Length: 510
Ligand code: FAD
Ligand code: DLZ
Ligand code: SF4
Image (cartoon, rainbow, N blue to C red; front, top):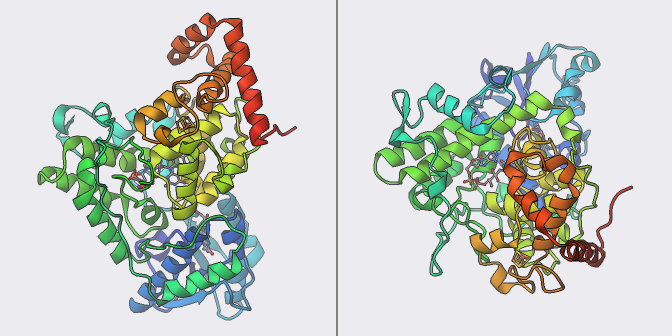
């Protein structure tokens, strides 16, 4: 008999490990300490995954499969995936272990040693739930000096015939990003997000997580994520009907106390296997063809899934393991405490961290231009920043988190992913949000105690990394401005930066 191991982010009946499953095989799903604590995941993320895993076990049983499900508090639970496979092998005559390749390098290398350790063949099958296989991405990347997402995305549009009229893009343009930067009007009413019912299974998991992970970051309540495929599909449909039409217009906008905006909130479902990328793309494309959503919104949404999501996964598997330790600016400032407590007078940071704590969610522009921008210009240590992002979001797995952090926000890969750092001063945040109106600092003040910290931190970042960035053609304008600055101005920037770090108590690692 064969043992088929399903991981917490492989909750798909179409996973490659199940493609030839017989009803007589054993399917193993287990809640283990190893995966729940290798970083201290947000409590809500653990509730979501454990509940989705338990519901998936029910789905498999309803299909007639023989499922062994190990709960976290099972007294026999060994705490590791390999330990649970070994334990099950003691109970059944297992000729082969089959698993779909995990999404994280650390686990893949671990599994590559399982055949020897367990004494049976362990077959690791490719994860074919993506639209670009890892070797296909490697072939695309080969010989290219720059790996720009835009060109990859166009190839994916052609390959999958998405939003195409023959060889040309629908509407004549590949990208409508320039239409996607509107400031929201004051009286905008954003629709409520999807709310799933909390059933007995989820209630049990909530009690378990409260008991076993009290020191993990984040709030469990309110819990309204979908934990089944049916509910995830409802969430997707609700997005397409209610939010997609304005997704493009307000994609980059941030509003005080409005965490959800016009985003889809489906990343967590895609990444654990409850939804497929192509069904999300197809529903959005259909909404455009039926006249239910405009092209700038539909193209923008599809680009995130068909472009960015596939692209970052390709980068991850192409560049690991070296990617994990990249730190081109030699940044070594420790993560300030307020990333955990939200206790900061910078209102934008306070908002984004509080919402992250409450919901295990922040939308893209909050992750990028507030939380990420601060990490970049403050020179925070990439290892600590990566750990934070990996544990706080319900959709976070290293294959998607690491390139977004190391490549996109920190530019720690020296420009492999981004052509220039996403660094910005308070002016940008003020333009794209209404956070500054309730802030103790002012985005128009450049130096001194009232100045927005993003303003002087930005220039300090530009000045201290001149050796690395001055030659970047997209940064020329910034260095011309820096070169025109008086010595007094430069000293003021340095002094404000020093004072700020002293005040928040974030030093540098030796
Ligand atoms: P929407 O804005 O509605 O976008 C639709 C979908 O597109 C998302 O669900 C996601 O699947 C995909 N997508 C959008 N942008 C990206 C991107 N840059 N990379 C990969 N997929 C993308 N996404 C994760 O899934 N997991 C992470 O751990 C993660 N970490 C991030 C860290 C940083 C610093 C940044 C800047 C971005 C990160 N993202 C991550 C990408 C993006 O912010 C989230 O996918 C998105 O916010 C999830 O919310 P949503 O489902 O409402 O997305
Ligand atoms: C994230 C996660 C958590 C919190 N718990 C489990 C678990 O108990 N059992 C499991 O099989 N998977 C879990 N996961 C998901 C894994 O960490 C994920 O499969 C790997 O990180 C590879 O992407
Ligand atoms: Fe953030 Fe600066 Fe605006 Fe305050 S003034 S909310 S710190 S950008």
